[in-house]
Length: 268
Image (cartoon, rainbow, N blue to C red; front, top):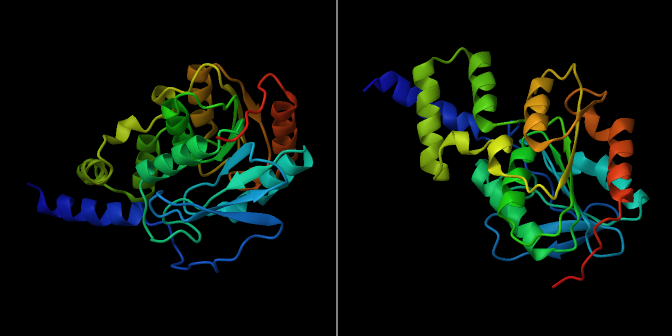
């Protein structure tokens, strides 16, 4: 056994799954204009927030290492279109407890939201939450979601790890150890987390926005997803983060929400 690679891989995994780079926790205050919904039975997610007067019809997912407050522009756009938007802080993010998380935890929490709020018809996901969204949609038998908007999406967790490791000059032995440690924590192999193979239902219309100049997630990830799900990649501005508040985002979301092919069900 390469003890050095084993130790380095373990420590690097802890760094990779750290969701609080600044070590800070925001105050647990209900966002302006929202109403809080207390939740039970979702590990490390105690509540969600809903904007708008009706049952939530748009689920908005934040990226890794951020929280729901970063998705305000998407919430505002949904409400401006007459919809109600639901956000939550993923495990280990925002007001949710903990400082580390795995993709499985985020995907499970997302699935719980779809099952508890069958009024959700559209999902908007930024960056790594695209993987959580794809997993939840694939597992949500009978879900009523009919459209998915991906903003600067990551295609796979393995790709994210490869880029992250390359930036740090990590050896292949250390990367292999990271994969093994994540499997131990998550219960599944890292390659499982791939939008292309998770199985987004064919009934879900997918629209993808990505900035060609994105220096966090390359636009090639968007093209890889598009080929598999039968979608087109629409170029946007704003880089990796400001794409969330771009005019292109507002236009894309409005187009998806104007399609009334799916009728909203009543909440169970």
